[in-house]
Image 1 (cartoon, rainbow, N blue to C red):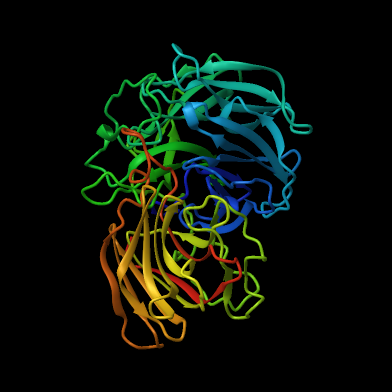
Image 2 (cartoon, one colour; image 1 turned 90 degrees about the horizontal axis):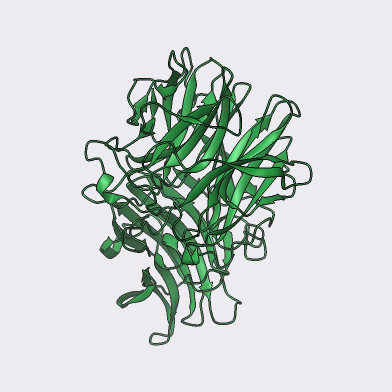
Length: 552
């Protein structure tokens, strides 16, 4: 059996391919670097992070507002040239619902790279996908973003022939549909060919509780496309009928399905296995019990599919409701189950591949294991409210119950120098247990700082003196609550520093969204980091970083 989510934590907009008997998924990364994560599997159930694509300064994410950045990568493989192709959008601006987005394409002869320089495609909208046709032509499908008054939002799905040598498109854009159901918000178009038909798979209903996967087919790549005869999504978490044409990409909180552990199932990508079976990788969310808050963001799941006698795609069980457990491949042998725990003692030249950084690139000038072997040295950066140069090394939260630990040595000489660990969503929403300088005591203390919806909250009382500048910190997260512990010596009992902290707002729905909108599309991260708003001359040395998951 395949147990969903197959990639827990922030892993949205999965794009899946198969090359021989190996499977790869690319996922969105938004304001996080390095951009576009690549996962690998041999059994569809266990997925290992193997690489990131945008890791050499190809994009500048400084100043990225939530939830802009790198959206919806589409991974494909052209067997005629043995090249991997990747199309993606860089969402630059969302103010005024203008949604200025530039789309690019890259290629590589190895999934691990090196990747070509990005080739510009278009700025017509977002969510580009490449289709390599049998005649050697290549096509781009994408959402044309609509901004005009009196026209159905968010726009049309359009298709054009693409120039993968020089970039751009050749010929005209063809408007083919505004969706195959009444849910609206059609986006993320992907083209497949099966038994002579072109099939167009769309994400629909907005990326909230009404999300789903739609499908249509045509004899010609430019259409017209016939909708699935059911008039409903072929995959969703909320199967009841919804009419929301023209509605902006809202959360649709009223479509929450209390009968399902999985919510928001949608944005699918189709693959045929080496055993001749069919699966869709898609995004999903799991809200905290009794809430509509999703701290782990949008995760990746898989459903088993089948083709009907009249040539339509449907879920293997004949329904359209996404499941938490599905059948694996026939005769398939499950790989060893992967752990989502993380531990790095920084004994190697390279730190753990799971570390990501918001807004800025990871560069040796501010984070490295070379200056003090056996430690990760982080040179202090901007305040964590900054979208320019925060010095944060973070990993995705993947469970509702886990322990985060780190050991830090830090010798600040000013109150605006800090180093420690915490939880992070974006520049407006985080919590940070840290060492800093106290002018009252003249030494180093453990303190707590929090940001909620852009408001700074300092926990000025209860600071703990740390005379040697060395402390071990532990944060226990459980279903939206956090307890923070500390100890000043190895192998002694942990002492409570701050307990029962409400951190449920560090979720897609809990951050700075407009009423009825989802404020973010990323997810909760655990982090270590350092701040220096004084002279930019301080640094912190971290002896280890560990995350241990306790349950799902």
